Image (cartoon, rainbow, N blue to C red; front, top):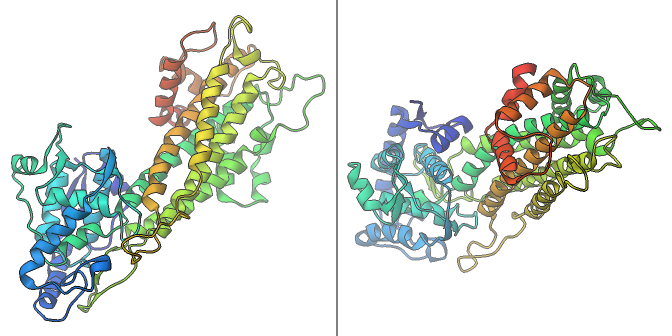
Length: 512
């Protein structure tokens, strides 16, 4: 079993995914436990003094003006968790909650939050036991962190609220902890606040979206190559020297992918019109430019994610010299912006894929293919409504591309008067990624059928391998009309699970 070791310097995207989506276990390094112990000593020292310190001996947010006496501080920390666990709506996915908890643990292990070792050890035990707090869709404004989602996780640490066990059954958290021999934690000074103040939910979703989109950009390069081949387009536009004179790395990567996939094809360049094409349509010719711009946006998003993965996000923070300082590092703007950028890139990639699909289905623009790729056009409707479904998904992608990060809404009696809405940006990006996967799947379904209809011409070895893998997956080819939804769902799974990329790479070698 894979083990992730947490130190004081953050974590990696690979480790987040291993914990969130896999069965990776977590270990705390001796360095982390030593740093946590040292920072706690500073908090204990401040707690014993009469001077008010935010988060240690005061209220929170707009209530920070009140000094809290020592006998009320345990109640204060318990109360902040209970009151902030105010989420509503559907449950958030298990992988998101595990990423959320792991990333909060990452910051706690940094030694900058002032919690006791007991807190980080208990949170580690909960994750390793496969216990997942019930977290709800609504409740985070993405400033002062993902407060409500993190509060529901902290509630489980206290043995309260509901959580899902490793068997998938939701039970009272106290029962689940007891069943796994885990003692609930009674929170002390600073600890309730430290458990709630972070960008961990939006960051976890960003990390997973980046991984999914990396696979989708490669998948889209493959389906674009299939569409170019099916439309008898020219692959000359993919020549590396053309892309070298406009040196965007993502564009070069996409063009190289398409070039590799099409190597050895007998279909490219066979224009069958009375007036042969000098150029292909933009959706074919400019495929590397559009997908490449998305790839470069993804590279920027990964840079932001890596910086955030190395960060300790809390307020106040404990500095190495013992100072406990208030700050604004919990503001989610850096993460929210790139979440929105990625939603825009996903929408545009879906849009160009849909235009290629429509071109494959239109007998006036498909250069010899039957209308709607139907067996007997008129009697059969072919893929007419499959394209409708794809168009509906693209329309939704465009709505999801509207940025959440510009929609600040003040809260906490105007103390938190500018918020990031990063959680909302992350939630809509998850939907966008799923929609884009379906859009690419419809293009795959149409393009493979169209290539098979080009009788007498041999496709490239890589596209032949994709065709064979698609048919082996039970996704049917040309013929008379049939119930299409199962084929489309199978194509979606084929793309989502990485089988499309794997089929092409079996011939081309690793694609970018």
